[in-house]
Length: 325
Image (cartoon, rainbow, N blue to C red):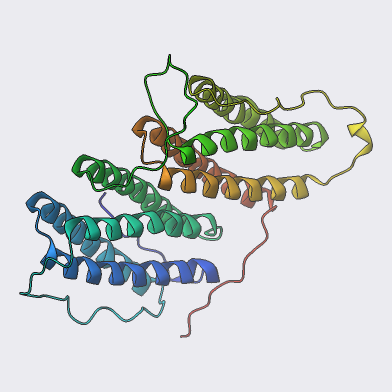
């Protein structure tokens, strides 16, 4: 991914909220720390292709750091202290095995998925900064997927317990965590369908009704159907179907803005659910791609819904950041 800085007019320098500022600062601080660890680890790696991959990660980290340093300077945000000197060592020891170093790298990549996602979902003030975080989320998802596949190829990943009740007709395996995540995702989507359908009936705003209907038909039901097929394939029990007929809802009165806020919170929660499933789905690459798709789709939807909420005036304004002159 090639990062580019979009120059922001001076009068718009203050259009950041306090969480966006912290997220930029914290991400750069984490990138500094990650680069320092990587440059130390490289000195202890024995496997040549693993060393090459680690070096590629170092070069990518340097590019990301340069981009974030320029962006923070542009918005006049005090920067964290950089690593004074990248660590070098002529010492090599068998204490640090490649497998051990790879496990640390995996933990780092897993944490960065949730970290960049937290930054993205709270960036509701500045659309450009949210796009920056969105790009980081996408990029980190791909890095994590690559890391898991590489570690599996090397035999450096511990195998979680397999789910034991897979039908003999299935030619795939999943571990116990993945089995739960599939079931949990479908249960979650069924609940989303019910709540969104109730809100669709109660909504007064015409285009909000349309947005809810589109969300049910084009996203929630399609994702539920995809998950249902996986549960059937792996012999997992299906949760109860969502309710589709509602009575006496006309007596309820919930402001459209309140329903919008609750839906937005639900989408933010869904993104975390997808991310956590993605991080720990190491046995079955195809199912990990499913969680990958769900997360990226949720990120796209959150981005759209934030813009919609801002147009409607339904998003609360977070405290603004005003740099000291």
